[in-house]
Amino acid sequence: MNKLKFLLNIYLFFFSIYLMSQNATHERDSLEIMNVMQMQENAWNSGNIDLFMEGYLKSNSVVFSGSNGPIYGWEETKKKYLISYPNKKSMGNLSFKINSLNSVTNEVSLMIGEYYLKRSDDDSSGYFTLLWKKIDGKWFIVSDHTSAKQ
Image 1 (spheres, rainbow, N blue to C red):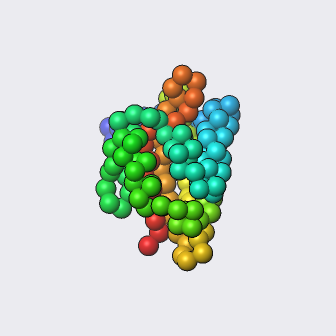
Image 2: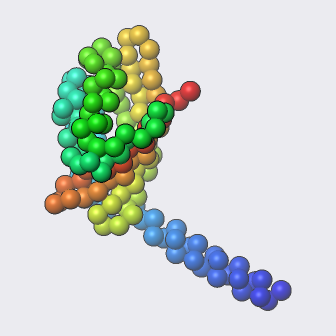
């Protein structure tokens, strides 16, 4: 019985260390990330995919995952957006709701949120998980997993 209690205490100790490592992102970094999100929302709502894509790291290592599987690279991600949203009408009006933003390291943060896309024909909404990386003092999305509600 004592051995079981000891093992349980060790498990709880390491689990609590893990939970404490999931720190909220520092306030300044949070504000910088939220500024990028606001820039993306504004760019989208003005029909500017080029500006919207500035929130993503311009790299072949960027990955966008959606219902059709992963797309690798900044250029390929941009192509996906241009094909899926060829004009302002199809883009509609986008808004984000951020549910959590936590540091993984000082240079990496994980964001979980929701999106709502209001369009004249049909609306869309869903969830996203974004992995952010700070490079040369600026925050960029390096991984985007977005799923529409069914």
